[in-house]
Length: 328
Image (cartoon, rainbow, N blue to C red; front, side, top):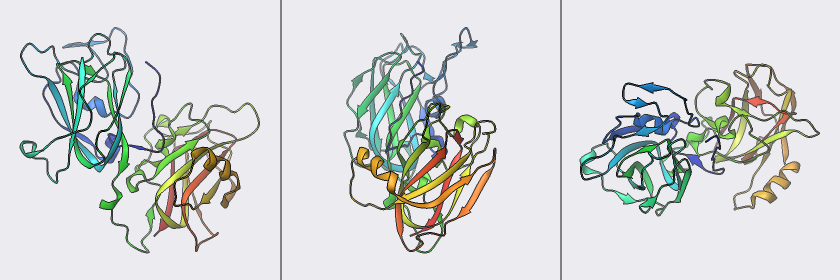
């Protein structure tokens, strides 16, 4: 199953780059539970087997011959509210669980015996080779998530779309921080195209690991240019930017520009995109180089706070990371 499922305007709290990890699972005989958290899309390897059977890109338990069900407990790297979950069973067809249910809890430690679980979803029927999407039943902040599968089977990926709880972050006045970092609550609102690479990768905290770990658009064959709109986790006075093209060599953009906007109330995304054409320009068009990190100071509107950023690339191509350094 090649289709991607990404929710804009939300953060995938299951991404291990945030520090999310597997704490415990009842069984992983056929496939390791840690594969559930792999940020890459699942793959299928034809005629590939290991010592336990068919190699599968996900978490798969043995066939249960006793009472009970299998489950996995996940520690979130960043506590947050979960809005939507995706129990992705790509390539699991005939060996997917019959049902699945998610629970969450908030705990300052990992003592599994003392965790008190709150329902995140109902016990839902699971479809094979599908993105099984479920709305969360709770708006609480969670530190741990438990995926229960009934009675056994395989799940390719688990995505936990929501928002990092910024009330737990301490932003020190006049201290420079990366306001575009997903750890600080930023997220992508919309983009023109992400044919080869997810725009959310721009906001990841560490340097990209390969070309697929950045944002890349298809080759543009007409007029215009590509763009991405980012909501900063915290409005700030912007000091400087970094635009990375690591691993993009024959496919980096020719140039870029950056615009900014400030608006605290909720706004319709379609209207936001239209209005973005006339946002203030902080960085006019600048040339880019391949496989490098371009740093540039912001010399405009230094006394104005911004919470929306628009990165324009001309005409198309790939960007690995965007850093927006500022202070509250």
